[in-house]
Length: 312
Image (cartoon, rainbow, N blue to C red; front, side):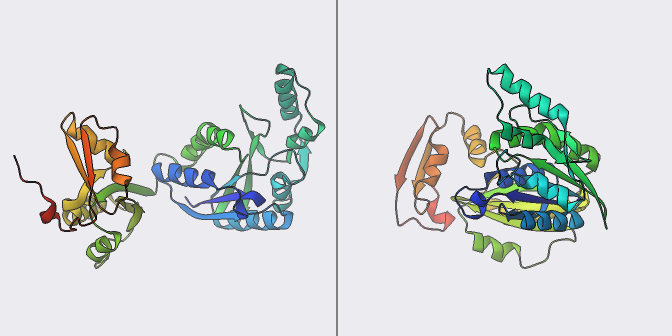
């Protein structure tokens, strides 16, 4: 299932607001076995929005669009969807009544501008927003690959995340069925550089359908085995090959934070940290350990054998 994400808003393209929604959504989808193929960011321009919606719909089975559903003049996403897919904006009276009821329940009068949020593409399906006035919606569009489904959500992070979890994820799971086309296995190393790992691991190709990804997160390096339609046997073989190479530096695996895994193994035993180039990052990860001591040295060796502490 090919998935793309579109984030909208001048505040994002100008850098005034960091797009945390897209990063959170990409990671959530990957945990479910779906790797996002493209992410686009577009400002509050009707022609640009219309064009990017059409482009993504023609490539992807699923397009997730975040932002631009508010009541103000620069919120253009619903209008862009209407123009992109030939579905004129139509008043949805049920959502208009829902908004009015929510304002009334708080003893407030709904502003006239909020009516705009009930004008949506004619054939769309509404996605409920239990915590805000901007509903989401789904538009289906025929494309060369079959049918594209575009899911539209507001950009307020609290509203967006709740709608993704409650409204969109169940629909994606039903759409994909029991099988997913991507499998992710995570591993964490400490004490070895990303470039040194690349020298060890990238010399020979990985099996067809399997790729190895790297993410540096001081003081750790995360390694990701990503299988695209790969068999379990091929993934197991790739994992065995990876572990054989990184065993001296392996400190964690899976989705749990590696520091939590290490500290859980230690229990109440003491932990002494010798920090060099991590500049306190290692200490920050372990500061909650009850029997922790730490020191800093700018002359620590990068040879593991030189760092070993003799047994008492």
